[in-house]
Amino acid sequence: MTAGRAAPPTVPGALPVLGHAGALLRDPLGFLCRLLGHGEIVTVRLGRDGSTRCADRWLPGRASAIPKHAMIPFGVAARKCPGERYALTEVAVLVATIAYRWRLTLTTGTEPSLRIAASPCTPVIRFSW
Image (tube, rainbow, N blue to C red; front, side):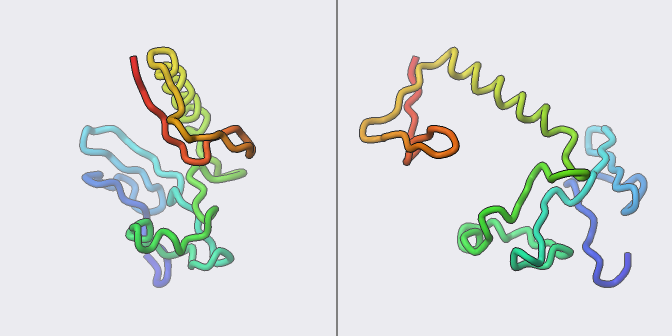
């Protein structure tokens, strides 16, 4: 690895198969994982050097200093995550299953606010059978 270059992403317990260039790892269960990038996009324009990693930046004391859109978990354009559609479909199925099996009501004193989508100002939901 050259000086000044960010370390490749790591998966706990994973063994490198192709090293940094391929970023192909074998997880503890024996499955091969190909990492397509660092998984987070933080740029110099947003106040941080994008080539360095800082795992504790999301701790409560430090998270407030991070700009709102500094992390794009699914990436954009040519670097877009191929699993994004699957992940969003999985979340939609999960929400539909919960909404079907549970009765969802807003707690008293909670009013929805109109933004891009209707959502409560203080999202507190009570689940009941």
